[in-house]
Figure 1 (spheres, rainbow, N blue to C red):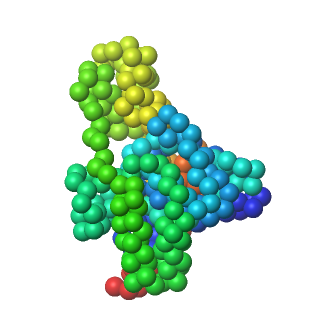
Figure 2 (spheres, rainbow, N blue to C red):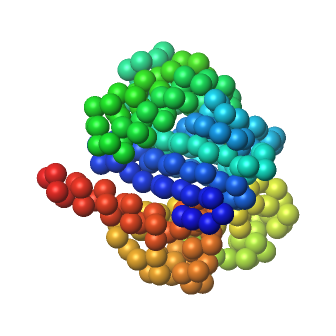
Amino acid sequence: MAGSGERARHWRYAELPGVDLLRARYIRKTFVRHTHEHFVIAAIADGVEVFHHRGADQYAGAGALALVNPDTSHTGRAGVPEGWRYGAVYPSPEVVAGIAAETTAIRGTPGFVSPVLDDPYAVGLVHQVLRAADEGNALAADTMLRVAVTRLLRLNGGALPQRQVRTAGARVAVRAREVLEERMAEPPSLEKLASDLGPGPFALLRAFRDLYGMPPHAWLTDARVRRARRLLDEGVSPAEAAVVVGFTDQPHLHRHFTRIVGVPPGAYQRERKNVQDAREWLS
């Protein structure tokens, strides 16, 4: 990814299953509201990142980490004119749960309490993970990842609260999400969705935003990009993936994918293919 000093690489290392990796420098980049299926552990090297998280702007500068739990909506942008440079690891919930069970006393589903943690030592650990992955040093990459996650959970970890679906509005929001997942390529209008489920359009909009942190149309775009990522991982072309998930064409996928993932779908898939080639070579 190039242009005006911005660059990013989003990849996987075959010896770190269940973990995505990222190195990036952004200046004008703006991440729209989105979620991740994995944890976000972003170590800021230079500059400042601002991200909206649970109703407030959070600021992470050099020596700090931006920490986002799975399925938690957030944004991202530069907090200073020169932008921000960072490295990030995205471990799956299963990876984090396994580390937490072995090295912490957290009961329940482990996660991060605060979205920003000032800890230059942990920032260094994250960058060591990325460096070791680049060098093909599996022992170091795995070790540093486990040390970093353990440290962050001990300093800033706890059991994640369960999403409440006790109210009638929350139950309707859950059902609306299920309908959008089932009909991703041809979703109903807000009015039709509300009519089918019972409440008025604004009541559904409010309930959905309260439960998932974004309105249904934004959640649908995010879900389409998530599904497109899985298709790209399986080798489906960007053009085919765009049609399957419901985008009008490949340029629409390109625009939304880049705004959420941080790299274009073609670059994302090339890195995935490199990992698959490495696995096949090693097998």
